[in-house]
Length: 226
Image 1 (cartoon, one colour):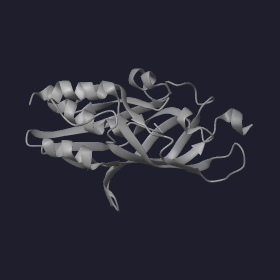
Image 2: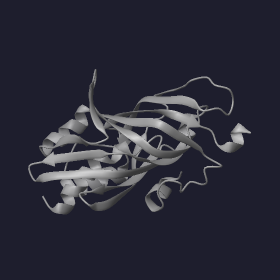
Image 3: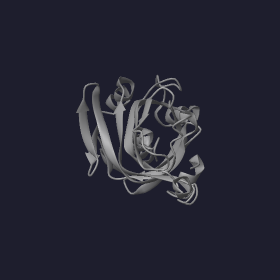
């Protein structure tokens, strides 16, 4: 397996982490956090985390390459009722969770820590995660073993399929928000790229590769607090 293909494997495995609370999809790749606009027009998310639980279908692809996922601190692995997840703290994020209409949620942000993908060929660290979501499409960039890689329209986030909850607070005040078990599916672009790199596989645009849960304190933009 070439170095490029190994890096693509690591990046393909971590791409679903770049979602939900972390805006335009192109903005995160080109400009990083803050590309969607000033914090005066967008709310911010703090004291939060993103947790990814991969599915048996994703595990099959990991097994195909005899790959094991390990957390890079401060991220950590979490063993739950439905399997193994990796939880990453949110470093910084801004956007609009669109509580009244979740499919319209958008935002961008960065996560702390990352993962190491251990294979028979070596260990590949995936860190410096920056992601964005708009219109249910997620994209982002990360560093894989020292090389930066970008992903445009890497996955679709089933925002209406997850459970979105928010603690009641007075209008304009910070609130605790949580998205639970939203499915992540690859886009056709991602499926085609994976096929080109690794050959035939059973993954399609309908395959759920992971479920994401995210939580944090959302502070509305200044205009909403006045």
